[in-house]
Image (cartoon, rainbow, N blue to C red):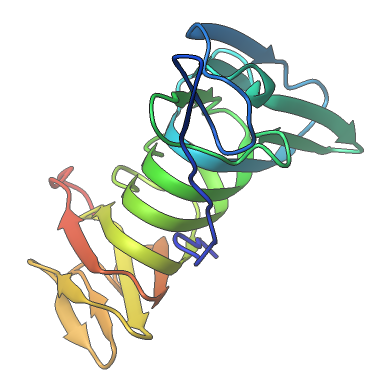
Length: 245
């Protein structure tokens, strides 16, 4: 399932000390640095990915030469992201996380991840973010599962494009706005329930408690998305036609 928004408690504390700003765990804001990280696929035939960020700006795209090509920009030293990868049998396990206990974010702190993944390997992805901006441009990735859990902020998930396999999705939640960009020529079914705000679904039809596009039930591949929780506003945006169904 694709989970996009979960309630999470996030403490934000900004203190002035000796002319500098400290984050909530007492670590001072320092010089902004950008570090790159590359992870090779190895012998894995499928990869399970976990992304865990307390708060900040997260961008995910495809098109990487390796399994992962990442750039991390931050200005609090102890917040250096931790990247772990291991292969067991045919399955790779990749975790990218903000160090436990360093979830403060506010004032002049900066915490940005730009992650690019390979389009050539099947991926099961889980994203957890406490607050901030999340942009998941997943066009071209071979996703079989996607779970995104976010507490507050703006979330954009681009699932447009051609799909070779089915995808199950769910959005769980906190507060804020979620935008789902969905394909026109691949069957899409979105079910939304549970304390939601406005749902904007231009171009979709109602099918009971679901929103579906014209390709639903006709295409060989289907995206099934469940939206649940206190999401403030949901925009369902339909992509351009590729000329095939």
